[in-house]
Length: 198
Image (tube, one colour):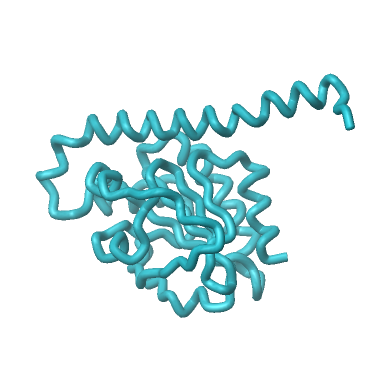
């Protein structure tokens, strides 16, 4: 079936847009990480360059995804048992990532819409900032309340960060990957993550 001329044009425009953003995100992340590289040896905490150096591919759809116990930046603790039989959205971000700055407000909206629902989405966001204090200050400044942890070597061992930023992964009720995205998601893409609990 032939698409109307306008629809065909939009289809051509929308497909490269996501790829362009993902490529731009990877380039910006690599540039930032290269600039921060000399500071890596000055801290015992895992810096963004150290985390990115150990980064791997996106997890495969259908692959089992183990979860770590993660101390939250607000003082709580995320425990893997919380996600048993629930859909969990994992979101890697950094306060210095321009693409995360555009996606994080949408993640907060998703969290606000889901957190009080008995079977709504769970969320665990993972900061790869150079310092834990930078992540805490950023969350407070922006007023973000989604559950956030700071990536430590222990967390990274269990749940390796895929290459790039931001990274969004949806883990299903059975503990397997339902969706994995590298690069900024548009507002409608973030809101569409709720479909996994429908």
